[in-house]
Length: 240
Image (cartoon, rainbow, N blue to C red; front, side, top):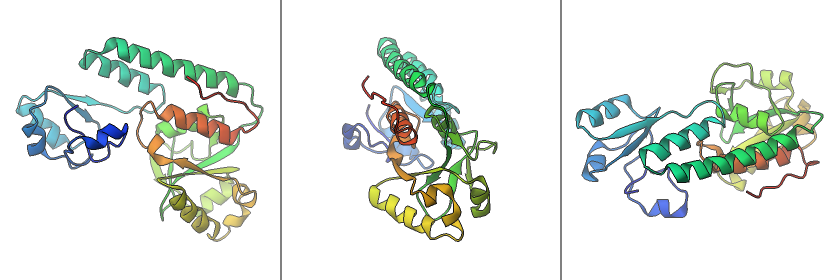
């Protein structure tokens, strides 16, 4: 790996690599200057930039995120092919599949799936709909996304709608515990929010947004953490 984006922070060695900018504003000149053998793009990168790279005959391979956790396995397989690392990719996929199956077996024993509202930390009530892989994350962790009927990846939820749907658990994706506490306090002060089951019972929990903000093998770690939050009665082994 010769260069990364400004958001590539894992593993720690990624921070030591030069940056070509952000997700929606990568710098063409910088990319060209590295003379790469392979450029990995993502759906959501500017289309004009991808066309420019192709016109310059630079080898760009564009990945699509997918709407489920299992689409991660397809991504790993394709990355294994384009980097000639099929064996490593197959090994990683097998490890992830085993962890998914182990969790599936544990969750199959639960009798009740709590209603979940997943929120991004911040002033607006951004949450995930059916089209986001985070909807699948909630399902696999043994919960029910209260916004599952909305055919979009992300929406700004309305306070009234949340009150009507009455989540039993609220998960806040935040970069730190202090940011989480900030959002939790502002939620609790919203008008009529004290009526919500999750607020009344203090069931507002923190999940590190860095684990789930992109579809990567670390999302499996977040999945186990979420399952443990939603079902503290289960003993779920994190071991690979």
